[in-house]
Image 1 (cartoon, rainbow, N blue to C red):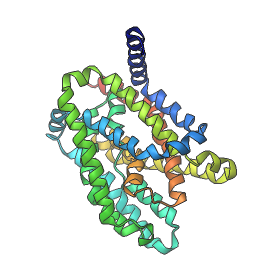
Image 2 (tube, rainbow, N blue to C red; image 1 turned 180 degrees about the vertical axis):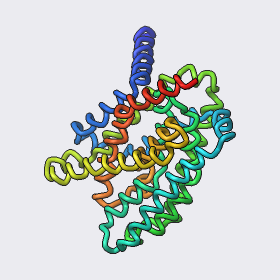
Image 3 (cartoon, rainbow, N blue to C red; image 1 turned 90 degrees about the horizontal axis):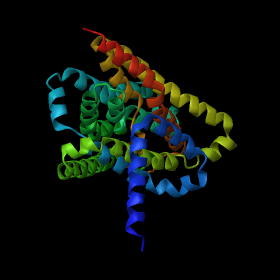
Length: 329
């Protein structure tokens, strides 16, 4: 039986590790995605943990939902609602219309599924966490993310009906039901923990929650890399094309969104753009029951690179915006 001293030392080590990861979240997350590439054997074993990891990440995010902050943000509802409508309705509608004009039968099923996921998915729930880390308006990011999650079961069902053929074996109603149950379950558990732990205590252990978030993100990253290392070795040109493609799509969504929302202020534009460029593709994979074509899976896996690297890439821009707005009288 371990001695009390050993247990206490172990708990102190875990406490220090979580705090360190929480305070260095952008670097830790960026490193974890590359570590996943070098652990192909573990990636295959951890793929079964993909859906639980997404559930835990959502729960950790809902633990930190501040009702007062959202209510205060909704006193000026236009920025949050405009960003949500842009992310969840306008962009996927543009993608859907483009595909319908080309002809759904002319587009590979894997491409259709990937396009559906990257345009219809809500923002990753870590968005508010990183916006807070940047010293920007995390309440706005949280409000946009929450609104997007509320409409997600309905909007994704609509665009699944328009875009995805019956051969995918997932009906729009099943997709909406899966997504709704997933969100209701994680939100319910997150809010229960929020009230049990208390807002004051949660604020005191913010770094530890961020650190736990980093660990789960690492598990998610490794699981998402299942098959990617082998694909990159056997088909390097296709892998390179996918790698460049996912960054191009993320950059395009980021840039267009930033320019559209720029009149509302640089910070609002940055927050809207960050969420638009970081889509929760894992949530879509979970809602689709994992029954997606191989190309769509590879797209999902490669898309984790911009998602995991964006906090590190965009941190200087966020600091510049924060400092620029601080000088405005």
